Length: 225
Image (cartoon, rainbow, N blue to C red; front, side, top):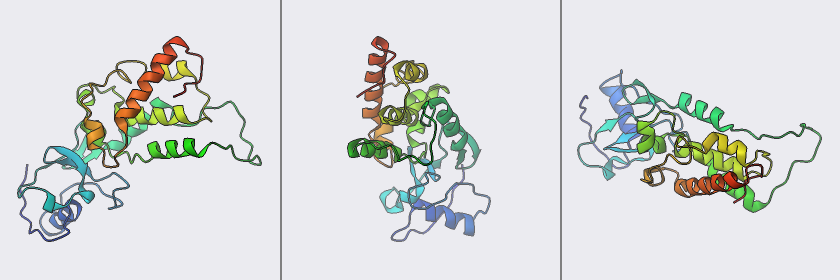
């Protein structure tokens, strides 16, 4: 651990504070950022014991002494920088994060339509910025490297909803129907509490669990909610 002193002023957030430290006190300080608007998720870190985004955290909302740590679970790069990209890439591959269909693509065809309700529901889950806060706050993910975490289960739920995806219950059960998937959650609800985009992660876990229960009795049917 290393201590830095910085003068606070109105509107100062942790992203700006860290940049000032790097520019004025310690050029070797490592932390990640891209958008500075709470969209990229790069600046996620543990802020006084709670995962959050540096760019969205005002210093005025914190105590005089602020303790920053890198996110757990992910591989440490240096200081506050961690490799979330490898974890999320492996999760996306495991979840099959693309439309699975036997239809041949026809660039001249009219686009496939879905209801506004379905489109909005998919968009709600697509708002995940892959910051890793939900994974870092998860008790199971901190103990098990193979646990998909709330981000992975949210991704599965997104494709279960999509009417273009032709996977059936047995296909999804192979991915999340075990204790490293939908049934590994301890129910601490930290992911839902910590998500900086306020995604309904616990309700998605419940929906995936219900879908897996249905799949156990009717595995060759498209999962419906």
